[in-house]
Image 1 (cartoon, rainbow over the protein chains, first blue to last red):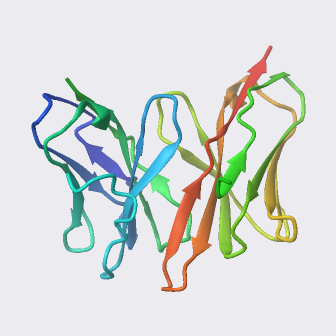
Image 2: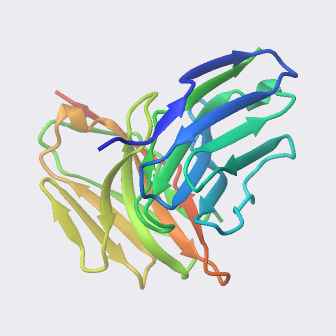
Length: 113
Length: 113
């Protein structure tokens, strides 16, 4: 079956612009996660959604970052007023429920110039 | 102290060798455990879940020691294609009913001919 998909695969933007990254989870998965990974670094948790519960936003690095999940499926991560330190690969994952195996999308490579 | 710790390596082994990785976790509320592998510039891929009774998948064996709070991954008969970074993942239960997912920083493995 179809895996997790993300778009765009690459995004180059100028400092100060807003960007939106999209994630399409595996059908039927109720939990959706966003992470980011800087070059040569480990995964940094950003936010997760579980069903209709309030999202866990504890990993968002600043109020420039926000995410929503519409209809319990597709999610959008928005970064406002991008900074160069936002440059990273943004990875989305989904799982049947939280604490179950997570399956990752291919990521969006964001470069802020 | 980090919640999940792994030896960063790198481990350099010849083809056919047996190699073992350990991962320690600090939170006794940890409830589910996984090993992922991540190839260079790719997303993490689930390798295997880790069960209390231990589990094996071909050349790979995972074990959990709750008393000592560590999990291990054993790779037998290493192949060149096993070269990757191996990530330990722990889901920690929260009193609210949610979970927190922590990824280890990863252990790099190089298998050489």
